[in-house]
Image (cartoon, rainbow, N blue to C red):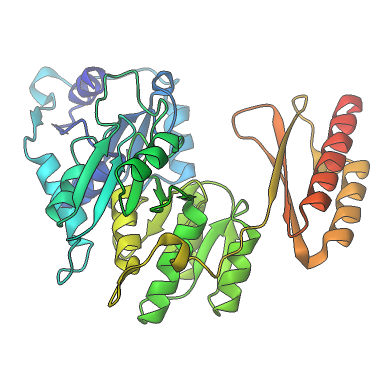
Length: 392
């Protein structure tokens, strides 16, 4: 933070210091304070040693990929500083957390509350530790908090949306109604039912979509990704809810939502976008949308009841290491194996081959109704890719 502050000041830019804050909190305050940019230092859903920097534009949305590449290109240019009289100033905002807490609460219906609910909230030892428990408590819930002791090294370590075992155990132990798992920077959500069953982003998005459809507030359809479970797509189709897939990554979900003019989308990892509520994925806001959908005249629905129309299909994911430059699309044996598998699975299965953006691997993912079939074809395609990569 000090290094960024010094760099901005040397460039003549004024800064407002508000940390630690969740990533979506930075997005909100950037927009609310009419600032030109927002900056987050975070490991996101990763271990602490993966700390990086995220940027938001003036409207509180993530930067376009084109703009990020322009910034990366400028890193190699000589640094320039302004004259001393033009240096930027820095100030710390003391009420940033309170402002963001009120914003989160404003996304829940003003005529409703969470009285009578017992929630376990897992903050992943991350940036929501001093935010999320207050949001749910101030809306009336009895809150048990875990993962609220960050020390700079324990973010996402055995807690949070990427590891829900501690939350599942706590929900059962405390006889809570639901568990809410956020990731380290607060933009992902996984929820746990009263019996300890975890529900990923796919089914949570379905719950929100169905509720909005029933109340005439689902404008358009839902955007998922290449990894969204086929069972969710089929369940949405049965409810006459349009569905489309984007590339993996919330930025691509956002791009497609904007292109379609829709509001709801996300990933199975728990990154959920409700564009009528926020410009970016927000775990706390997403949890409030799910809780709104679970409220009924007869009491609170279980997550299982709310998502009962969804039958998740088995998925198999195999990572195949490849040499640099290998393109599976140009391999005739790989293409032949894909055609053969597609003919066998037809509408009852799906195949996705996706090069990793961070590792020298191709991810071979199959899903379908018949677990034995997808296991067989996943292993077969992976072996063909591996053999083709060796001779490439």
